[in-house]
Amino acid sequence: MTSTGGYWEPLWAQGRRYRRLDDAETRLMTDHLGPGRRRLALDIGTGDGTLACHLHHQLGYRTTGIDCSSNAISLAAAQDTGPAPGPVWKYTDITATDLTEHPDPAYALITCRLVYRWMDDKRSIVNRVRRLLAPGGTFWVVTEIDSRRASTHPSRVSGSPPRRPTHSLWPGPSPVPPTSMYSAATPSTAEQRPIKYRMTVP
Image 1 (cartoon, helix red, strand yellow):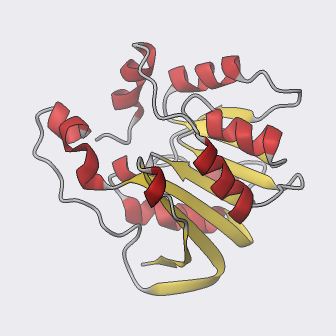
Image 2: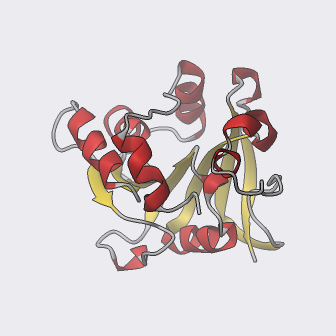
């Protein structure tokens, strides 16, 4: 399972790093998310904390970054050089933890950058996100097009049979009108067009 800490811990410990934010991506967030005005934000799979720090220090959200890798969380905390108080960093696996028990259960913004693709049970993740979003909140997903990274897909690297490409961000047709989702494809800048959806869950 590529969504668990057991897979990601050694990669972070070995110095593996992932795609940094670029100007095109930060412009999209400025245009479509706007100023945070101290509203709550949750960054799922925060990694080295780059996105959480941008949301917190540049856009003005009160951000919590969570990751299933303790090595990633340690790196995120060490790299946050912005003014205090900075983002809150939590070693948490969203696939196994009931985040509604946290002190801030309702978020105006939940982000999931370059992580959603590797989650095995997408139905469960979308349901968890729905329960965590405040009315009118946004689920911001940035994901690669599955076929673009065939040679480095974790299932291929590990020798496991490749999974069928995922073309939908969620299954099922049931609309939840107050919530919106934006999706931006990577890595091609030309393809980073945000598409606004009504979030649907099974």
